[in-house]
Length: 375
Image 1 (spheres, rainbow, N blue to C red):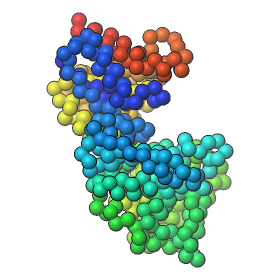
Image 2 (image 1 turned 180 degrees about the horizontal axis):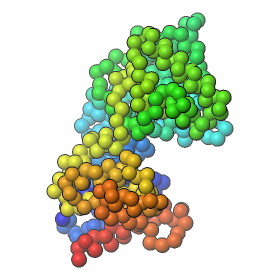
Image 3 (image 1 turned 180 degrees about the vertical axis):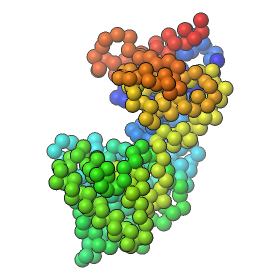
C-alpha cells in the first residue's frame, strides 16, 4: 500500500511534519512495508514556511528586523530545496501577535520588517519569492515594506513620512530612484485568501482595522489615508490596483506587492500544493490521509484538508481526514471529496492534555484506521 500523508499543523501541538511523522508510525505498526510519502502542508498562513522547508528539504534562516511597533524582532524565512525559491510569512516580521491589547494601533504599525525579510531573501540570490500575508498588525498600505526596499515616501517638505497608516495623508511624492532593482527580476507569488479591495466599506480599514485596534474614528481616517495613497500612486506611478481583489489584504500590503513588486495574488493552498509537488506525489496512492487541529464547515473554504482532498479526487483516491476537533457542520465535507472524518481524541480531556498528547493520539488513531482498512 502507498499512503500519502499530507496534513497541516495541529496548532500549538505539532508542526505539519511532526503530524506526518506520527501518522507514519501508526501505519507502520500495522503495515511495516507500507510506502509512506510525507508531504507537510499549509494554506499560506502560519506554518507555511516550516511546511515548505520540511517538504522540500530546504533551509530555515532567522533575521533580526523591525517589528510592527518599531522594536526589534526575530523573523524566520526559508529557502526551498531548489535553492532558488524563498518562502516568507509577513506575520513573522509584522504580525499582530507582536502587539498586545491596548498597544494595538494601526495608525502607527509598520510593514518595514517584512521588507527587511524580503531584502534578506534577495541577498541569498533567489529567483522566486512566495509570501503569505495573513496575520498582520498593520494598515500602512505596504509603505513600510517599500521603504525597507529603498522606496522613499516624502511629505511636502521632502521628509520621509512616519511609520503607520496614520501618516499616509502626509504623502506628497514617491521617489523610487533607489528602490531595489532585484525585485523586477524575480517571480513573486502572494498567498492571499481574501478578496477585499484597498478602500471602501469592504476595504482594508473597515473590515480588518478593528481587529488590529482601530476605533471607528481611526477606521475613517485610515480609509481616507489609503485612498490618498492610491491616488498619489495612480498620478505618479501610473498604476491603479486599488480595486483589485486582495489589494486590501494585510492592511494594503497586497496593493503594494501588486503595484510595486509585480506580485501575483493566489489562494495560499494552491501555492503550497504547487511547490510541495503534491499532485505528482499523490499519483498511484492507495489512500491519502490529511488533517489539521479543527475541521468544520469552514474547512471547505480553502483550508488545507480541502485542498488536499480536491487533488485526490482527480485520481479517485480515498481521503481520510483526522482532527483534534470535528466542529459544527463537518459532515458537509462528505460532499467535498472526503471519505472519512475522525477525531483523534480518545475521550474527554482538557485542552492542555489534548495539545500535549497530540503525537500519541495521532499515532493511535491512524493505527486504528489502518487496522480497519487492512481487514
